[in-house]
Image 1 (cartoon, rainbow, N blue to C red):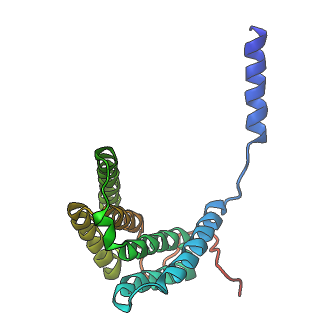
Image 2: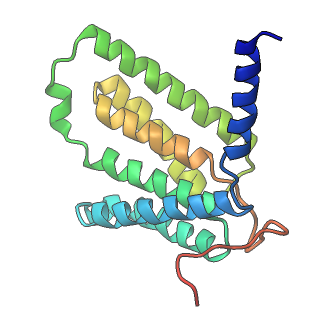
Image 3: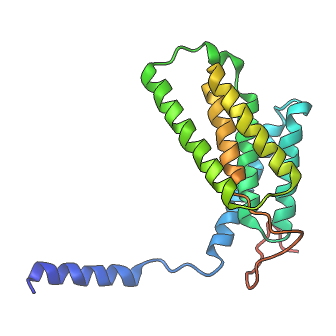
Length: 190
C-alpha cells in the first residue's frame, strides 16, 4: 500500500476514535434546549400580538408545556417553533406588499414556499392526527400561507408556511404517553 493511502487510512481511524460520543439522552437534552429558546422568543413576541391574534399562539404554547411535562421535548420544541413563526406571520407588516421585489427574488421565494409546503404536507401525512387545536392551527396556517403568497405578502406567506411545516412535525403520543426506556428531561428539576 502506498504511504499516502496508509497515512489517510490511519488518519481516518484516528478521527473515528476521537469523534464525539453523545449520551443516550443527547437528543432529549437538545430538544429541551430548543423548546426553552423558542418558549422565550414566543413569550416576547406574545406581548406584541393583539389578543385575537394571540389565541392560536397561546394555545400552541400551552400544548407545548403539556408535552414538556410528559417528556415529549421534541414535540414541545416543534410546537413552540410553529408558535414563533405564527407570531412573526401575524406581526408581518401589511406594507411589505408595497415593496418592489426583483423577479429573481420572487422566483426564489416561490420555490422556497413550495418546498416548505411540500415538506409540511409530507410530514403531516406521515403523522397521525394531533389534538384538534393543532390540526386547526396547522390547516389555518397552510390556508393563510397560500392566501398571503397570492396577495404578494411574501414574508408573511413564508412565515405561515414555516409555522405549518413546524407543526407538521409534531407527533401525537396520546394522553400522557411516554416512549419506553427514555429519561424525561424537564425545564426544572423538582
